[in-house]
Image: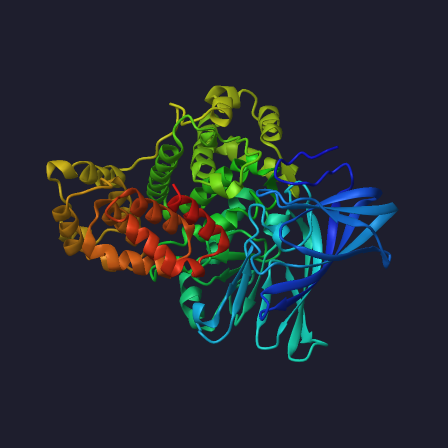
Length: 589
């Protein structure tokens, strides 16, 4: 038995799926996907083949057109349900017929009123971390990478986009429907399987990049991300050639639960990035960097997630430094450090979930998802760079990507490669302490600048009466505001809240990062003039980066606990299942 991933039933000794042919019918009326998945094994096999499913209805399984036995085990609350096929000896392909549940954890079905256009329904998937199994039967582990072809049939007035190379759209044999075809020739882990269906249009931004959105959002999005080609060039300077052919992206409906999702060939992005001043496009740089660290070189399991995110945050900030200079990198690192400190404070400094290498067996990955692998991972990668020098480290990164491309690796494989390529570097920085021990080591690097120190000094001197000059603050960048607001006390007297709000009109801020940081202070302080905007904001966004801290702040304060419950009751139906579950856990504490 070989089940190396604690979050998957896949036994890789039974056989490894290397390709899938998918035929999917999207039924908006029943909120179900009916489908057939033809699974191709890397090597002919026979006997049991265990697959991951969650709430899937399995209606049949065949090999060579002949039915084969299958059984569904009892469901597990974290893992879902094991599907076991019994394959004849020498099986190369098996087909599973299935239908998703209306409550599939990876899918969000939106009514027309929940979209920008208000006329057509919308559907999108979000398979990270272990939600692909709710969409299709698969070996839902990053260790089992596969290529695929897909045909997707939808109502004729809707368009399908997929994280794959698009083929053609033709009339379906089903009246009033169209069928779209796609191919993914590069192997991906299951969590990167992604698609969306809706009234979707596009605009080219460069020879390798295109933005997709609903029509009402297209021009705003095209303007916001117009500089994507310069990001792509800067990323190739860091990592080497881009191997996914195109870097297209889809600006999602507001209920999308993340800032971005790095689905290859079609990154998904939250609309909260459309600030109107290009101040939040670093998220696009992050998702672009994942094209190498994450999509090419992938964590073997969720316990190795820091390999994806730590390197990607480091790369995102390298790209930012190339485009905007070292001070921009320092400000971004400071914002990240604030988030890391909050995450460690939430878990507790001795929590195993403040380690880089985690042990999540038996636990839902969505429950321990945090900024720790992102920001603690970034600090370790930065420390290694400082220890060996930028030039040696840049060469190491390119060798690392080339050596492990299109594979999924463990933390231990990375450390072994690090020692072979940069002998002594891991010991010099205490890498094993960073990886295997809780909390933040004392040698964590700090990034600073005069601008950063001035902003932090203004905030830390608040209790002693320091106040920013309103005239000078009008020239602050969105990053300046984030640094300042994050450094202020989370609980302030009403008079202080009123001064801030009236001096800078924070309750009406258009930038979602500035607004959320201000609303966190208002919620923690029980500042009632901001309550209507808190309610409104929690109904406008579905991004967990904003939802979870705000609901946490409201729930912790006795004066606002009822507000949290009432607001969730009003808006929970519009949240993605992943986000809804996270907030339910907060309110149950």
